[in-house]
Image (cartoon, rainbow, N blue to C red; front, side, top):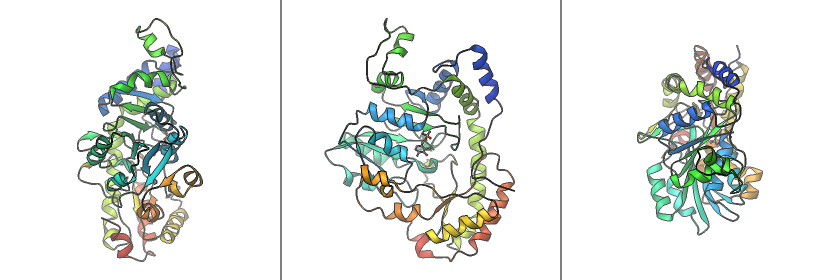
Length: 389
Ligand SMILES: *Cc1c(COP(=O)(O)O)cnc(C)c1O
């Protein structure tokens, strides 16, 4: 029995909605399904405007353009993230300034942001790792004081909350991903959420090849023409039809994931008590969405052996990001501010376990294999516990 790390969950309605789009003969973007998705996202996240994009990467590129990020500007972000978080800004000639993460949530360490601010700093990009919210209260306060943009990379954060508010509702702009590996999917796909009304009109223009097409179709202007720099960031209706089927089931999908997450969490309490692993920490202010279940092992060597032991049982456990400040492009285009102690240490020790809605009873096989693999782990209280604040 092979247990993959991820297996896309279908709600059963995807093909039905795609057939409807096909039947209606409207295949370009911004048709009825796209509009349904926009309204759903706006209701769910309380964003002023949601715009579907081809990917979270595309939405991040739009955010960088909307924030007028230009050559030499600095953008503060964690190093422990996906490449797109940085790439979108490097494309505009900006310099990613990487700072360390918190050892508990693995999110950007808000206490280190201020020391990284220079006269060239334009924006702070936060990443809600594993769907656990960053300390948005402190982060928004710092940004206000220094007049900086906050862009939330909420690729993993749909259906999660911080202090009762949806992730993605704090910064001027936020981005979501519907990539096959996320909780709610459309294969490839994403969205830009705009909380600051000032950016809505330009966002529509940038997304529609730099034209005022959206305003034209609403009858707000009498000509449809090239008004700004832009590109094509809107997905077709087939993607939106698929996504609509998923959004309709966002609550049961999340509930199911949370159930599996809790089951792992309870099972591994014993291993944590033995100092063999450290489990994820979800602060009181955060309601997460069970995007991921990870364990922190005592060392890189322990992790390598752990992954190999699970693979021997046909269970796919995987590590995650190579910190961007250590990646070739990260070194070429970015720089670090402060030490990278936790980013370096924890990225080498993190392993993600299979977690997908239809995992079902296979989860017991994973738990069993984890316990077996953990037998060879030397408990090292210093490594596991001292790294927690
Ligand atoms: C998945 C992910 C992305 C990229 O999303 P795409 O939709 O594949 O472009 C960006 N940032 C983070 C934090 C992600 O997890």
